[in-house]
Image (cartoon, rainbow, N blue to C red; front, side):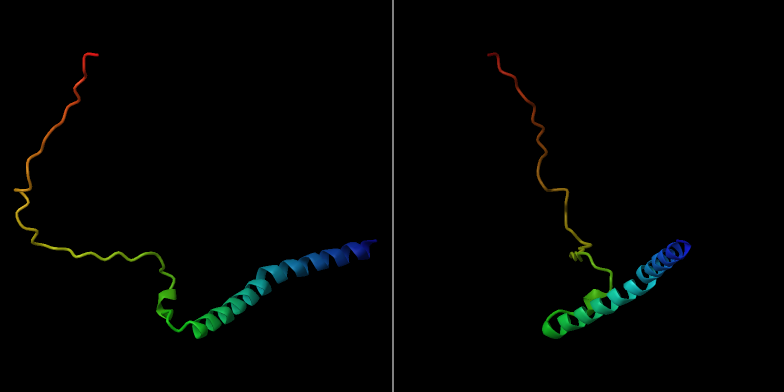
Length: 85
């Protein structure tokens, strides 16, 4: 009975080592192969975009001389008028 428990504990420890160290390595190799195949099949995609920064890039024209902003118009303050109904 003690031998069976020892074998089960060794199997459990081997499984833990396998999932902690070997499995992530195998998944990384697999994903690298898939990524390489993807870029071979789709050469229009730029491989430099995969640098991990990701996200959206927003560019805008920053104008230092915006002209005269004092003559944009009048400010009108509207108030609600309640009727006598």
